[in-house]
Image (cartoon, rainbow over all chains, first blue to last red; front, side, top):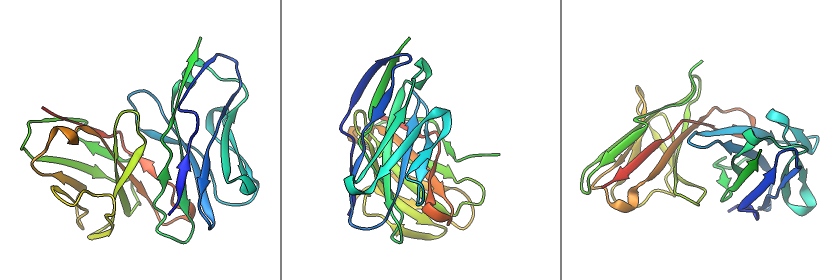
Length: 114
Length: 114
């Protein structure tokens, strides 16, 4: 079974600061990787996804993530955050060729001060 | 372009009553997943269904909880004899059979048991 760790539970930044949220997974096989965002009071929305190919993937709203296979990591980055990025961010993994049921990390709460 | 629909958005039940949560997947999607989210916790997988079939219910409590996805109509998550510990946000997601099977989430149902 796979597991996902998000080490930063709470992050507080000022606008224009750079962001990096960590995500590590454990699974011996080939995986698909996702980052979701949940704005206050709303549902989860897909930010970006990685299936194969270029390990640097770009998503919506200026977010990107890099898959480093040797480190089992899929960290989320944004060069300059905005107040509107205040939200909960979830990393998720599913196993290719399996049931495709994703395992979610616990989430990281990001607060951006104007 | 309707996304995943869930209703009701908010549901209040007294202890011992039944709660019925409904989910209509995105058009063209044949796979439905139910999750529970508690404060300060991530999403916990409950059950994965296709039309008329339960594929994986490994996350469902053994008692009081059931789910179905009939040939016609929405998927239903049913909680019998609710207790205060059932209070949570319940999210439904749907996917198609495409590569990666990324999931699209509904707005959730917030269940409060008084």
